[in-house]
Image 1 (cartoon, rainbow, N blue to C red):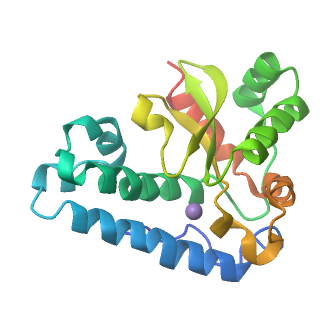
Image 2 (image 1 turned 30 degrees about the horizontal axis):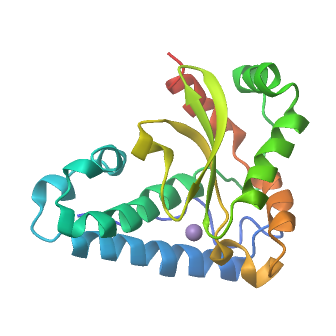
Length: 201
Ligand code: MN3
């Protein structure tokens, strides 16, 4: 069985950039529904129900055909949101140490990285995600539709941004670019660097 993880901070911790009501609905209702639907889809499938969620994403091809689409959508929703909550922190932070060196050498500067990542988020048509990937320390940006994610391609994200309307519509309405601009203020760069170091070797 998969379970809904608690937020690592209070619902209002990311104010004013992400509002309390959005966090309540996003975590309790949206993420909660992905977890419930994932467990329902995998009823009786103990091998998959006991799998680490990221391993499940890498092994979607082994899930029986009849339930694979539901597992892809809801398992993706569970993995992506679990990763998203821990990618943010109250008060935010600035990248430092090894991660900023890698960003500078790959993208030219932190600002150029932000511009490219933000543009991928604005440009993602419909619902989806933007990711910073580390492949043995080599950084790249990718975006995915719906609840698809890099683990499905055996890639390792170290940062993810939800650009579904449910992530921002209450506060920002149709202004996705404004939501993304605000989101930079609450990125947990300590966590991103921890992931970067973990997946660099
Ligand atoms: Mn979402």
